[in-house]
Length: 225
Image 1: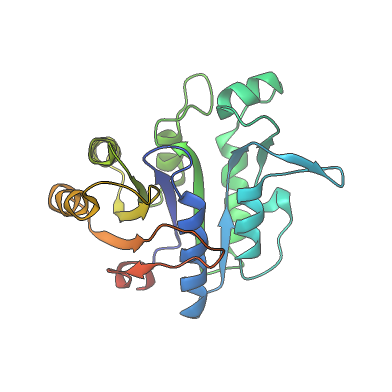
Image 2 (image 1 turned 120 degrees about the vertical axis):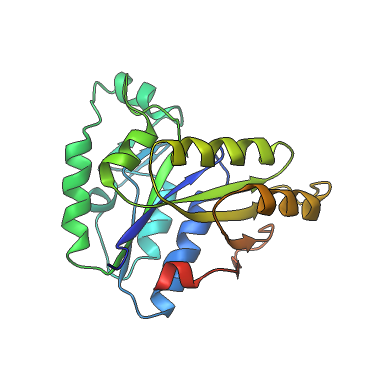
């Protein structure tokens, strides 16, 4: 059975989930797939022409195959750049997984692949008692972990992978994203992660110092089969 999509999570916030998600969307398009980026919950947005717009959502929309409205690919958007459950509470909004699932279902009939970008890391709260990992489980999609390559990444990556696998959720693999251009012993850290992570390294993303994003795929066949 062909995978219809992935849930992209990260080892922290500002770790490169959007960068990877857009690169994955572009790569899938190059292989002939119709694609859409989907961000269920976004915090940190600006009012533009009477609509709350999150930059990550804008990028996902720009890299999707067809034009989608903000509401179609981002059911919940909050203005302050704070933890989503706090933003939702301040806005007097309950984040409803069923509504997110309906939005997701409305997209999959028009595309081959959906790339879902989570908010922050895997244990970020979305409601008083519901975490991002609960949404992963609810949507029943395999997860891709974006590892921000910087000091502390080994611990963060191993904890994230272990947490997801312990819930019985499939992990397709992980991506090494260089977020610190001055990271000491990058190659040694990457080697250690490759040895200790139980899922495959899918790709490496070099430090992005230009508008042109690049990626080196290592196990692309896992995603385009």
